[in-house]
Amino acid sequence: MTLSVELEREDDGRWLAEVPALPGVLTYGDSRGAALARVQALALRVLAERLEHGEEAPEFVSVSFLAA
Image 1: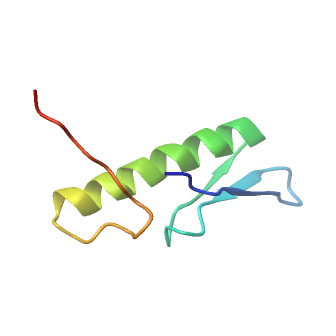
Image 2 (image 1 turned 180 degrees about the horizontal axis):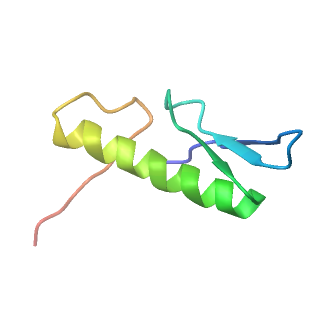
């Protein structure tokens, strides 16, 4: 699975990072790297919450587990 991240620098110098495929997954950071790390962590938390609550995962999420 690959999620696209849009990055933009604000006039005040902060960086804005967003995952358009996951509504609400948007973060700010003092640097490009900080904003990217935060949005990646938030995207993973959102996906985990959806799975834990039995919500449908987005179409692009495909995870398989094999118990040995």
